[in-house]
Image (cartoon, rainbow, N blue to C red; front, side):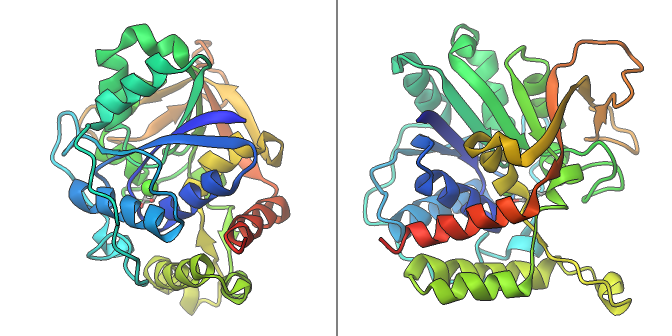
Length: 315
Ligand code: BDR
Ligand code: CA
């Protein structure tokens, strides 16, 4: 089993990444830290605690992270994830008191006390991870891998050239890719291919356990907010993009992805392409290949993992 810490901002797709970690035989989820991104930090923190209440896993420590990006004001994605950050489903209230330890201290505690290396999966803006790398350089060697959802080799979803998580805190992403720690990036190149369709939501709902019902409700909401009207009008059937679960699925079973080492830098100047991940696909800069970049996913295997994940909670 690989020890994993999840840094997330739930968020509909973050919720599925979290469930994958809880359900996998390959992962021991030892802690969760929460980032400000899809919603305000208090909300993503509470949503995480509610997801743990839903799955009876309130034994896992959760700590709130930075309240805003390193050098910029917070931008949230309430248009996609709603007022709560997890609109569309009723979630149980947490039954344990919120922890007072903050993300940076929890990361330091977990990594310093662990005999083995720990993998960090990050599914929101990378603020907490950057702060940790800057404040605890001596613990870098305890990190096995940072697998994050963010960026894109080609395209963007918040501006034409930037993906949301990186755009929210480009300085943090820059610190992470330059950290020297092994990094894997799951950007839009691959996450737009990790699609679930209405029939998949139906299959999830039919599993019938409380987690399945909640997830199906969340996915129905996510489906509504992420449908691109002009594509739909042209009859293009686009599934729901399972961005964040890709970064977790890679840790569970890397064989379902096509991912290649490349040189990656982040645009942090205030240009048209602020927050873009500049991926040297053709090795033009001849620089160190600092990031393994995901490009493709075996969709049937990925879907099987999603279904297995939800089924796990029937036991
Ligand atoms: C990313 O942005 C968020 O809205 C999702 O949770 C995901 O992490 C996709 O661009
Ligand atoms: Ca996210």
